[in-house]
Length: 101
Image (cartoon, rainbow, N blue to C red; front, side, top):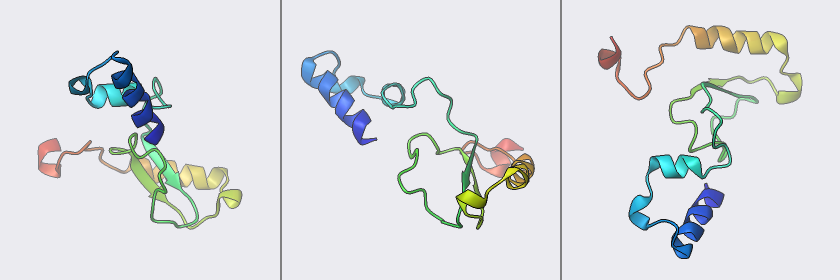
């Protein structure tokens, strides 16, 4: 996020954009993951219950799967388990259950 802010600030300073031009689309276009779809599923190993500045802009609607398994021990069967749990979820993209139903 810091790199993106600096990149946009340089554009404003150079006059290639105005402060009022800054919107969510511009922010997304200036991230390092521009052109890559936001993740649908994020697997967090080691039981940690925080994101540690990992893709904070890109994950507001990402489903989280948290496992106590440490990364070096995370293998195919753990991945399949994460996918199976993900398949059971109802993606709401910020909506309530009533809005989706």
